Every structure is written in structure tokens, then in C-alpha cells.
Amino acid sequence: MKYSLTITLLLLALLACTPASADGGAIYCAKWADASIQGYFGMQLSPPGWPNSAAYAYDINVTNADDFLGACPILNTIGTKYHLHSLWTNSSASSSTLAQCGASYTAGHYDPNFACSGASTWAQTGCASLNRTASQNYTYACTPSNYLNRPGVCEVGDTSNKYGLSGTAALGASGVRLQPSSATPTFPYLLNDTLPPYPTDFFLGGGADLNGWSSVVFHCGDAGAARIFCGKLVVLESWSACSGGALVAGPPTPQGPSSPPAAPAAHQVSVFALIVASIGCLFLGSILTYFVMQRCTRDNSYKTV
Image 1 (tube, helix red, strand yellow):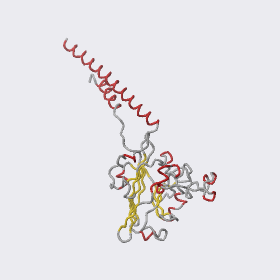
Image 2 (cartoon, one colour):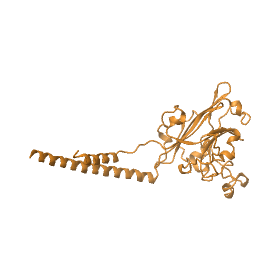
Image 3 (cartoon, helix red, strand yellow):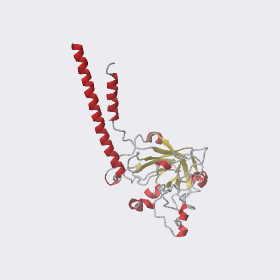
Image 4 (cartoon, one colour):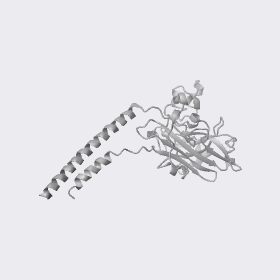
């Protein structure tokens, strides 16, 4: 027991030198599990200190598309639009369809930077004040090609205009399966959304906090963009928990042209600080090891005498 305190200090120093996990950030998930729709939509934001990015994955079976053809006659022939919305006010359910996904339940698109499509949650207020409405001759120019070069033209929550409509596959006699397009090199993920939602804006409550984001809404892929189904986003601990075990790991590490943008100065500073801290930890460990050895030497000399 003589050396218990010294050894404890040494172990603490070694633990302090152990690098933190490089796991991804929080996973936000919506799920559907009823007679008409089953599946999930997940989004993982980059960890704190990393360049802002997000990865998305979804796999949704609309097993009875006939229930929705009145609102979206083309549901079983083309993909859907999908967006992050500002609210979730339905306290009795975590997912819903059609009228229960209307503006009073989910509001408009999450749009903290006022890119201002006609469906922006600020369309009638902040966008109008900024002269960013169609009646004021403003054109919302978010398309996948424009987004690659000018991310700011898109609303933060306008996911499908950043990446295009969902992929669509027939499911039985009257069903539709919705996933990211298989043409994407990172299928089934959409990676490196460089204009992701801000984690501090995530909003779980009811009320009218239009600055936040709380839900995902899937719309008809036609010009009318009727709301088909929607879900409340909640934080889960893993992709497996979100997907019901279908995805057991996170998105693959992007390579080549799809790699994230260069780290900002703040991240470079954090890496430098980590290096300095590691050197400090090793120095502290060396000192503690030296004192342990000295103590052992003295004690052995006493025993010899």
C-alpha cells in the first residue's frame, strides 16, 4: 500500500493523455411504424470542433401508397421532396400524415439565414421585410448544382433541393420505397452537407419557436408539394437505434472530391492545443515515474541495511 497514492497519480496522468474518441456527433432521428408507412430518417451532425457538416440516411416503406394518391397522384412514379421544419406541436404522436403535417403542426422550412423559399418559416414575416418573396420579384435559386457552388442560396432545412428528390422503387403491388438515390457514391448516405442545421437551434418543445428545427416532412415531388407524412426528430445514441438495426455503423469516411472543406482556424487551434496537452501529459508522466523509481530505490536501500 506504500505506493498506492503515487501509482494512482501515474494512472490519472496516463488517462489524461488518452485521446478522445473520434466518433461522430449526435444523431437526430424520426421513425414511422403504422399500417401505411414504416421506416426512419436519420441525420448525424459533425462533432463539436470539426468543420460543420451533416450526413443523412433514410429508408421508408410506404406500403399503401393508395392512401396518399389523393394528395400526391405521382407518389408511386417519382421521388419525394423532404425538408427540416421548424416545429412539432403534436403532443400525442411522434409521426403523422397528410393534414396532421400541416403548418400548424410543423410550420415551414427551417431557414435561419433567410434564404427564403415560398415555404420558409419566415415567408410572411422576415422574408417579406427583406424583400425576399416572389411578389417582390425575388427568386429562390436553390438547386443541387447551385448548392455545390453557392450553399447560401439554399435554406438550411431544404434538404431535397440541395440533393434532389428521393430515390423511388416499387414495393409490392401498391407500395413505394424511398431512399437516397443509388447514384450517390456514398449510398445509402448523403454526406457532407456543408450547410447543416445548427445544433443549438434543435427544439423539442411545442409553442412557436420558429428559430428552431424539430421535424422532417416529406412532400409530393410535384410543383404543389403536398405534405405526405412527417415525423418528430429526437436524439438517439446510434445509427442502429435509429434504423432498427439496418445500419450498424455510421457513414463511411469521405474520400477525394467529396472530402469536407479544410478545417477552420478554430479547429486548427484545437489540434495544436491537443498536441501541446499531449506533450504536457507525457512530461508529467515522466516526472511521476522518476519519483516512483526514486522512492523504490530508497525503500530497497533501507531494507538492505
